[in-house]
Length: 343
Ligand code: NAD
Ligand code: WQD
Image (cartoon, rainbow, N blue to C red):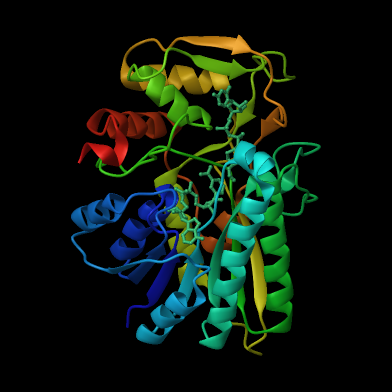
């Protein structure tokens, strides 16, 4: 019988792609999202792509009563928890909002899972928990630290889940994403940032389509081959498939004790800012204006994953190239110049 997965934060960029991969793999899904950083149209597009219907509840996870009703009304087998605020700069300006939202939402969700006997959980963590790593590639045993309130919420939730798994039968998988990029190949769902994009690729995409003048390249004097920052960009569909593998390989230990596993989801390959811009130019077929400016405070030179553990234990590896990411991002951008507003 197919399992039912509650996808918390499922209307967002990564969540909507996960919904499609889950439906394709014959899971049933229930989506909960407060739409604070997303649009319900993403879920209509999920139905359009998958041809499958599912329940959506517009609920803030911190609304314990409303979330409790979801657990009462559905037999939930597992939870994927993506719901949270994610902008590093904003988290430095409004740390309380980040702790309030990300930590409290997680606490309410985990308490209700325990109350209703749901123990299988996949949590969206981030490579940000490695801080400024001493070397690259980064494996799961590297020291953990936080350099901003957003990252600290990820680290705190990871620590909470390790404690919970040690004391209960919670079966937890922490997935540390590197730099998600690209969009579904249909061009129907993708990243739809509010206001000025914080992340490189949505910004490049908006320059490519003429919404912004030029890309500011933050720093040209890093100790990297071309002086610009190096990151492990991973196609959002590959990332989404990693969640399906995590659920499919999840096993409750025989003694019914809890377990907490950690995996990097990255490609293992780093690309510089200039290489990423050049790959986007190939995809869109024209030049993209850029200017090298000062470093962005808090940025690190290089960050890319050692992804072998996920390959060995989940049977997962990233399959799509940087060129696929850029082509798919460009298709999404051209088909939806104003994101979901275009509908
Ligand atoms: P997103 O903002 O598109 O998705 C997050 C979703 O959670 C949104 O739909 C938002 O409306 C919802 N949400 C936020 N707070 C909520 C609450 N209290 N109750 C209910 N819903 C709530 O972001 P994304 O890029 O899809 O990221 C998903 C997850 O992955 C986040 O937890 C993020 O921190 C993590 N992550 C993202 C990246 C990245 O670069 N995009 C990298 C590493 C980790
Ligand atoms: C990538 C590279 C920038 C914008 C962030 C979060 C991290 C994770 C992923 C959630 C860097 C450069 C960027 C621009 C630029 N999110 N850049 N001009 O900083 O690696 O990671 O998103 O967990 O926690 O910190 O991603 O896309 O912002 O930057 O030159 O306009 O592009 O300096 O080298 P980052 P990013």
